[in-house]
Amino acid sequence: MVGGVGPLSISPALYKNLPYDSEKSFSSITRAGEILNVMVVNASSSARDVKQFIELAKKRPGELRYGSSGPGQLDHLAGVFFERLAGVRMSHVPYKGGGPALIDLIAGDLQVMFSTYVVAAPHVTSGKLRAIAVTTANRQPLLVNLPPVAETLPGYGVSNWNGIFAPARTPQPVVDRLFREINKALASSEVKKRQNNAGIEPEGSPSQADFAKFLREDRARWSKIIREADIRVE
Image (cartoon, rainbow, N blue to C red; front, top):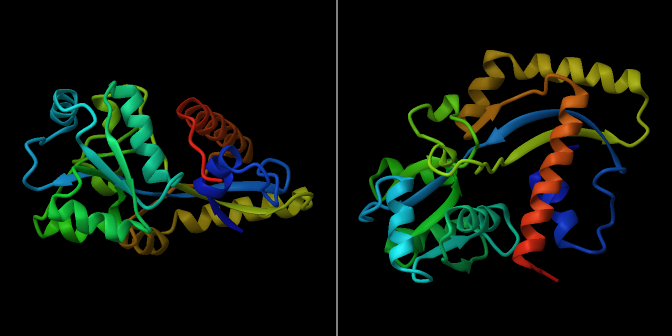
């Protein structure tokens, strides 16, 4: 199975009755990639970087609107996390998907989004939107000139990761073989090229234990953010 941040890190804190246990139902094999997300504003915005955006948001508490692909989705929670660390208050506007939200950002009805790069890229290239940061904690090779939000807001880091999983109780020799072969594939130039074209940075885990540790920390962080913000979707 290819699984990601939504069902395996966020959903356990959002839903009371999931048909699976995100920790016990699967054998975690390796992280596979980072689906890049970017903080984007309308091209006419006075904010040309994260610092200027925060200053703008503090001058207009509650007035700036950020769109998302829906309540509890990663781009929504990225905005919640941003508000809490920056000490600003914005208005969340949920949509049925990121595409319609981007249309309203281009139209000026929204002021910011934390969009997937591959969806926002054509509008950034055309000059309709301005990407001011990546949401990951560190710079990304695919967007090396775009600073992370964390360079302005220490501690901020939103990873739209995906990884490879097998059913729980899969024999360890099988898991070990999958780990070796998948990481070998992720290192190939052809896979890297195809993933980059889709706005993904291939990224295998150093070890299965490292991936398991990352999962625990990611679940704990989103659980804390969701609980403190009292976000509910049921």
